[in-house]
Image 1 (tube, helix red, strand yellow):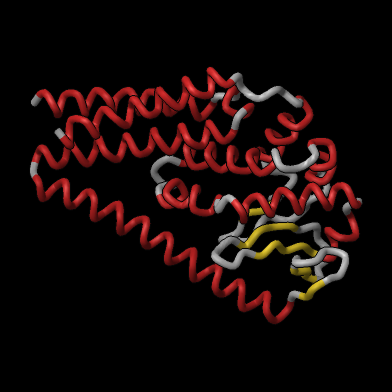
Image 2 (spheres, one colour):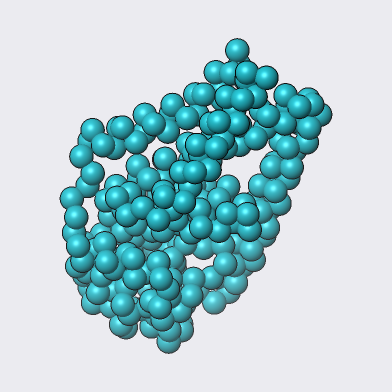
Length: 256
């Protein structure tokens, strides 16, 4: 009973933190810290729910774990199928361009740029984007998309997108932080100007610049124009330590 009570209290703390953290702007100053904090918070919730279920009945704990694995697996397989189909289409219609080595170009008038992630990731641009963007803007967009591919942001988003029907605000908050993290690799002024030129929604299964009318883009533009300094190191570490403390609570009781 003591263990169950501690798990329930920890779960309550996590759930109470979700709303304020989803609406917090201080994490915008250090998106990487914000992403890590969300991951630790999500892991704590999973451990607490699974732990309480296991204490009620071992089979129930197993059922919770199996359900989560099934949800994640279904989402991942569906995403892989979408990306595989997208790659087949790109192999037929995309072309190389000497102006952007290593990038696939689609002949389309709309301004589009995205990363198709995977073991062999691709950065894709439309001919409309090549025509609309200046050299500096193009460099900023490519830096943004290459960061998505290099840091495998698709894997970061996987568990949150799989559970998006249950926690849309959380998935949206993490997705915004992922975009802001990729923004950090580009020149703020050039990227800000480039973002205003995009007119098309990113295809399913990809990570991209998105529609300029999207609320998340307005948040990114606000952040880029503000040019706020990153969070102090001690505040970043305090947030990480708080997250690790939350995770260690269910782990200590379940392992012990």
